[in-house]
Image (cartoon, rainbow, N blue to C red; front, side, top):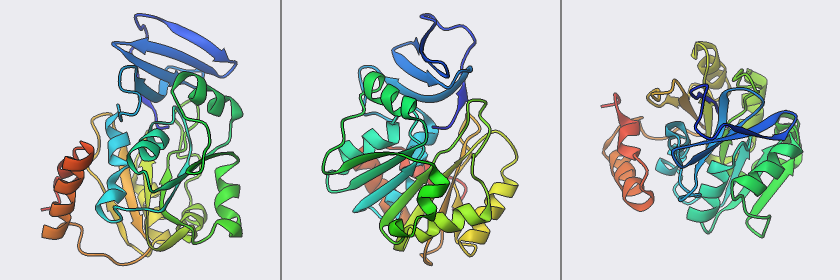
Length: 252
């Protein structure tokens, strides 16, 4: 999951999980770290299926364009916030989450309430680039959510035209890719996404933490802002409690 920076001292300190993983808790929120102060995921203990971080809710922006996905592919697991949200709130959707580190998968299940695999949920221990390059996965996803960062918030770990083109090939004809960007100038990342998607991209407003979510579309859709899109945002906001209207800021 993408990173945000925490205060260096937290009320309950940190708990080591594995050589590269640790937990911290503050104000009722549990955080996952990859061996540094950077936050790689978060869960409010009393609301484990809630999206706690602003960028996480923005990663659900594909709902505006494809509100009933049959299959969502997620690259990067972290504390499994997106995985849990889709599994809980999209009951007709299959979710495939791809995570390179088995320790991260184990931590998500033990400490962040990630459910066991079932007929709708599959967590795959695999490299994201290798997964998207496998021809067996092409054309099977309505959404792809890309959230790939290392322990020092460097990333996206894969951030080139070839990778984004491979992500596009996962999509069905009207599918959407959502990419979380963080930690540096976004221009090169947006350029690579745009090249892979033939210019069919939309950058959401930058979150307060500095994250920016960029959407790439497999096919031409309506203009980034029109009345139909606003109606979709209002419907998403009512149904899921996500601040979808705010995603349209600056597009009018």
